Image (cartoon, helix red, strand yellow):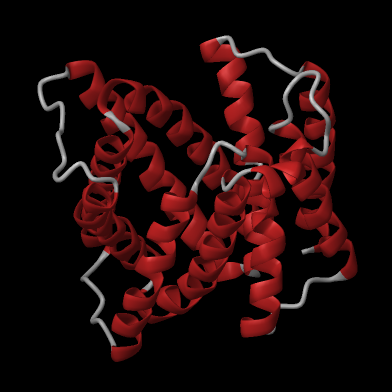
Length: 283
């Protein structure tokens, strides 16, 4: 069942990316990110209350919540345009989960994680560019290091998700993560980026619709992610949800007409599909 939840999370993540990309173009990155996460948090809170009483928070829950928000926000702050290097996330999560949670993958599943990582890397390659360009960016610019920092931060956050889910369940933990990160972003990013305060384009109806759609997709993504994390190893789940990059690319081709680097995308599709299939069977 965890495979189905992870794939739902991946498809919803692709929808989030598609909607958010258009919202950012109309309303700004900080404002759009805070707004869609707030919408998702409210939707998740309603779902949590609908399925039963709110779980009682424990001391471990509070400590884990305090620990998870900084790397979650740091991952978003470090997110860069060097998309291929973000494919290292499944590897980071697998390593961190092996060390901290003793979740050692089987040999076939480890091979599947490597294939997914290579496939996600290939998705972000530009037409006519060298396959080594993203790695060279580590030396030439800070962007590559930001991408690796994002992967490292989200890897730590993913491991902490397992602890939070164990304490209060997947729905309440999703609310904690989503609303907590929205509040932290709203407080910290305007100061860090020198904007002083958020400037929400409140009367821009298309922006509001895009933010609402992104929030709904993100809420579904979080439900699928946390339900699958409750049932399976973190490395396996993140490797399958990494297929969202491929789905987002497909959505971009169909909806936005983005048709660059077709050969790289075909290769990426084959690698990600093969890796996901191996993980689903071997995990």
